[in-house]
Amino acid sequence: MRKLLITGGAGFIGVNFVYYCLERYPDCQIVVLDALTYAGNRASLDQALRSNRVEFVQGDIRNQELVIELLQKHNLDTIVHFAAESHVDRSITGPDAFIDTNVVGTHSLLKAAREVWLNQKQNFDTHRFHHISTDEVFGSLDSRDPAFTESNQYEPNSPYSASKAASDHLVRAYQHTYGLNTTTSNCSNNYGPYHFPEKLIPLCITNVLRGKSLPIYGDGKNIRDWLFVKDHCVGIGLILEQGKVGETYNVGGINEWDNLSLVNLLCETMDTVFNARPDLKALYPDSPMANGQSSKELITFVTDRAGHDRRYAIDATKIRTELGYKPSVNFNQGLAETVDWYLDNKEWWQPLLPK
Image 1 (tube, helix red, strand yellow):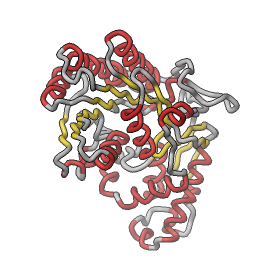
Image 2 (tube, helix red, strand yellow):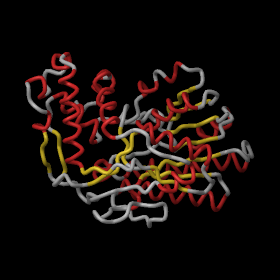
Image 3 (cartoon, rainbow, N blue to C red):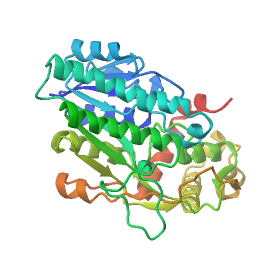
C-alpha cells in the first residue's frame, strides 16, 4: 500500500490524479499539500475529502520543515510532485514566482525527502519521488522535425520552461548524487475536468458560454500534442508501479493539433451539444448558439505571444514499450467529455473567472 504526498493536489492535474488513485489503489493513503494560490481550488477535492483516505494540508512546498513533518507523521513513502506555476503568459510578465515555486520549491521538497528517507532511513528501501515535468523543456520543433524523445537536448525558451528544466535537473542530481529514488515524466498539453479557465480549452469553453471572444495567438498555426488528463494519470500510475528509478518517461497523447483547428473543433463540439440540449440556450443566453449562431463567430486573432514556441510533440515509444502505456481517449471523445463537465459544473468555474 502506497502512502502518497501529492503536491499541488488541488490543481488541475493533481486533483485528477487524486481521484485516479482513489479508484485505482483502494488501499492507498493520500496527503494533499497545496498552497491554494490562484490555480489551486480546495472545492475540487470536496468529493475526495469525503473519503477517510485523503487528508488536505494547506501549505507551501518551500516549507521544508512542514514537508518533513508530513513525511514522518504519516509514514509517507511516495511524493508525486505536481505543484508548479505553469502558465507561460504569467511567466513572461512575472518570472520570479516561477523560479520561487518551480526551482526553489522543488529543491526544498528534495531536501525534505532526502532527510527523511535517506538520512533518517524511514522508508529507505521503498520510497519514490516522482516529478511531473513538461515537454516545453525541450524547446520548439519545426513542422517536419521528429517528436521529442527522452534523449532530446533541453532548450527551454520561456521563463516557465526554463524553471521546469532547472527542477528536472535538480531531481536528476539528487538521484545520481545522493541515491534518492526518483522518476520524472515529461507530458504534453493536458485537458479535461478541473482545468483552470485561463488555459486555452477551458478559456474557450467558458468564453463561448458567456459570448466572449476566443483569442487565437498569431496565425493560429502553433501546434501542440493534446493529452486527456485521465490518460496522463494512467501513465503516472504505470511509472510508479513499474518505472525504473532514475529514468524519465515522455507521456503524450499522440494527438497533434494546431491551435486554430483545435478551437474550430471545440466550437463544432459545443454547437452540437447545444443543438442536442435545448435547455442550454436558456441557461447560457449570451452564447451565440442561444441566438441561432455558431460559436466560431467568436474567433478573434490577437498579437502573438513573445517567444511563442511553434510546435511541441511527444514521442511516447519508451513508456509504451517498457510499461505498456497507451492513451485510450480519442480527442473527439475527450473534448465532448470536457465540454459536458464544464456545462454541468458552472458553480466550480464561474467564481474563478476574472472580475
